[in-house]
Structures are given as C-alpha cells and as structure tokens.
Length: 400
Image 1 (cartoon, rainbow, N blue to C red):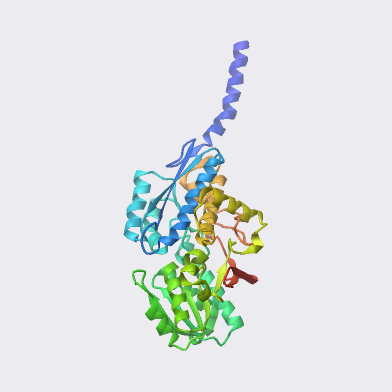
Image 2 (cartoon, rainbow, N blue to C red):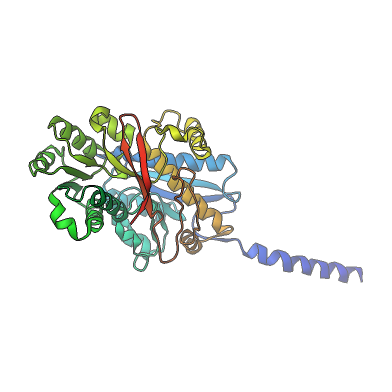
C-alpha cells in the first residue's frame, strides 16, 4: 500500500511539473542561462557618430545582466561594425544568424543597412526588432512581418513639421534638403502630407545629397537662392552640422527645422557651432540631458546613473545615447513578455503586442502600443526650439 501511495504521489507530481517544464520552449541562441542577440552599427565610416546608439544598447544589456538578466537569463548582444555600408551589413548579419545563431537581430542602425537585410531575415523568419530606422517600409506588417522599427516613423515626423508650418506660417516658402534614399524621401513625403494640398505651392525648392558627398555646401547655396524663408532638413549628423554652419556663413535667416534623428547637441550642434544653431526647430519624443526640467525626474535620474556607471566617458548631450537606451528598453520589455517561450515566433508575437508601455526616457504622455496590424512604436512628438544651451519644448503633443 505504501509503495502504491508513493507511486500515485510521483504521478501527481509529474502531472504538475510536466506542463510547466514543457512551457520552456527555446529558439536559436537561447538556453536556461542565455539569450543571444545580434546587431550591426556604423562604428566606422561617414556616420560613425550614430554608433552611440549601439554603444548604449550594449551597455544597457550589460546592466540588465548585472541585475540578474531577463527571467534569469543573461543577454549576450553581439554588436558588429558595418561602416554604414549595406554590403558589409549583409555580411555581418549573415554571420550573426548563420554562425553565431542569434535569436533575433536587434537595433541595427540605418535605413540603407536594414533595407539590405530585411528580405533575408523575413525569408528565414528571424525577428528584426526595434531597428534604428523609421522608414515607412517597416510599417508593412503584411509583407515584412518579422521587421519592426524602434523609432518614430519618418513620415509621421515629417507630417508633424508640415502641420506646424501650415498652421503658423501658411504663406511660407519652403526649401528642403534631404538625403537621397528612403530616409530622406520618407521625411519629404511626410512633410508633403502634413502640408496637404498646399504642398506644391509652399515647397519652392528641393536639393538632395548622397552620403558619399564631402559636403552639402552647394546644395545650401542653391536653396538660399530660391528665395525660401523656411528651410527643412532631412539630413544626418555631419551633413546637418555642415548645413547649419553654411546657412550661418551665408547670412541666411530662414525658419530652420532639423529632424529628431539629427538634433543631438554633442554630435551635431556643437560641430555646427551652438551660436549658429540658436532658433532651430526639431521634434522630440524623448527627454534630453540638457533640459533642466528633468533634473528631478525618476526616469532621467535612472538614465543618468546608467550613463555614469556604464558609459562614464560618453557625452551626456549626445541624444543618440538616449535613443539607444530607449530602444533597448523596448527589446527587454518584449523579451520579458516572452517568459519561458523564447522562440522566434513568440518573440515577434510579443513585440507586436506591447500595451501602453512607457520607456523611462519618453516624454510624458508618450507610450508604446503595438499590434499585429500596427508596427509604429511612436505616433506623436512635441516640437522644441534650441536656445543656445538646450532644446526647449513648446506646445502640445502633435500626432500625424
């Protein structure tokens, strides 16, 4: 009788433990102790300043590991240099997937870079999550269901500028400088959408540049000659700096807008000359270190402590460190939601089911909600103006 009682008890234990154990389902790169992720960043090349995004993400995962990991698993984020060269991005991404066996690609930077790999990753059903590109193509959940952006969509942001200009300066003569790729063209399309049926009349000149161009001086000279009183830039890092500086050298005084992707004080405005940047407009959906209103904000204090401990030599005025931190928080949130079902399929499912999550460095009122039919993580922003020291927010949240 005693043996029969023990057997029944063991059977009952197995019936309880069995399903729980079965719930541990792992994809490539996952074990009881580790989650392996991969990414590419432009640590070298013409836009190396943007690699602050990757540095922040790697450091954030180190902090998560020091705090015990995600559900007890350490995160190994393998971050490789692609020099902002799409061909190199392909090579490095194939290594991450086929040799390193990562669960997912996370936070890879740049529209050209991600464009070069997204078909490959979607064909292999590898999550390409919270990438540092807001191109409109990442909204296409039907044709690229394994790819999701981690930034505000460029069309949305461009529309925010268009709506603001239309409301406050309806007779503006607008000149546009844009990068000649999906990045710049998406922003330009968004601007036109925001201006609506007035776009054709209000936009009096456009000029594009290639990332291989040495400067954008000639483009700025041409745009000034158009007689425009408003300049909207859809440019990146050094080209934004060059344009700001050239506008000042020419004595041109347009209402001047720069994108959120290129409004970092340390990486962009300092090289341009802070005095030359006074009066610039830009969109913001994240807090900035230069804004004194966040001094007592718990989220900002957490970011500052993180920076001092894990990136002590970094420039706190470099907004790209905030962007990387924000995207890393989104990745961690999706991984936490996975629990012990760490397959590629479930990770994608969870990334597309984030509900009213507020990254700690997001502006008040901005939360992230995704769905299987809505891959945009941010839908709104506030406008700000540079006063020579910091970006000063004004107005309410604007959505597009």
